[in-house]
Length: 209
Length: 209
DNA sequence: TAGATTGTTAATCGATTAACAATC
DNA sequence: TAGATTGTTAATCGATTAACAATC
Image (cartoon, rainbow over all chains, first blue to last red; front, side, top):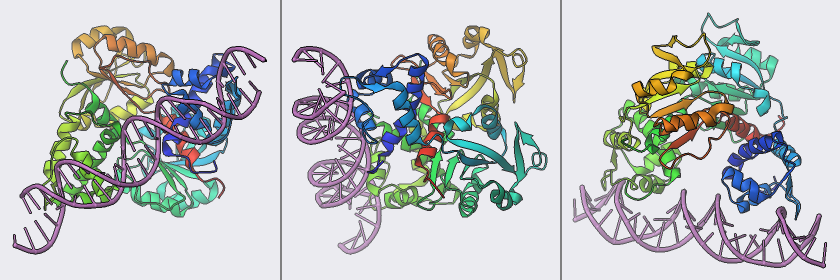
């Protein structure tokens, strides 16, 4: 990743990875940029340009080896980094994520969660312990997390993010309905604004029927 | 919306709406494209270009009236359309959405959910009845839904989407880890690929620490 | 009227697509 | 070797930014 890679390319990487996994499940050994593009709704040019941001993974006259390319993508995405991640706010959404979402398949190890509700603190969700927000500093010393999922109320998201940044958190997966304030240059934030997403769907739907 | 509006602009509309709501909460009456841009991390030019895709909402020498602009955006986003929406798959995520997410603030009325688990069918989540997938055709006759949230297993998402399209569904909010097959031209799909999102975060995080 | 700020046109920038020599 | 397909450069397209006349 010598020169800067554009966000547009980065956003496509997980999709390539997902598609290659499916190809491999189907026993496909090699694939050309043309087939890959057709299968994913991209042009062959774009596929080759994208991969060549990171290196020459193909072979002239042959194409790309599915397994090798998948491994390269896993490395680029750092899926084996094992970053430790915590969840702030142990509500319904946290519940859904803990029970259904495989953090380890996406580069993270979920270590614990935090909340303020007395009936939650001290319990576990699916082996993940829930601590009180007052214990945040203390437990971050113990767990040394790298990233945090924000499923807390939007009103406190900014303050919590700043508090976590001070504790060494360098990545946020933000599910709150707010945008976080400007963070340090080495801290990244990935927003999942469900409200924005549903509004977009509404906006794009054809009226009448 | 005479000429085609680019997806990049559409994606910004909910953010403008959100920001304007906050301004109004804070008692701000009018705002210039420069201030709005500064507050949102956009250029003044971009703000003006964006709004002018839909009409001249501002006034020279004054700027934009916050309330009026917010109303224009609500209209563009069709937030009062009241599209009826159903949920396919009444698992943890559906639970989280039903309990915490205000569909009506985003242009939709949630009417019912579907699942196949015997212990779920016949029950309700927060007033929303859960029917069996076998009753899909029948209940769609009753509820006449316009859109569907897909929180079902990815393996069946494609088949379900086709079944729903045949029943008149014209919009999908897709939480499954798959991309839906090509749909009719008038059917739109908004993907929430959580896995892609978290992988992107992982990829963008600085290594080491 | 003078100052401010829009709406809009032109210039720039970046991303996608096309073309083709290199080579497996 | 001939055919296929990459890696890479050049051309095109679209989106963002800058500039400025119009006007409140």
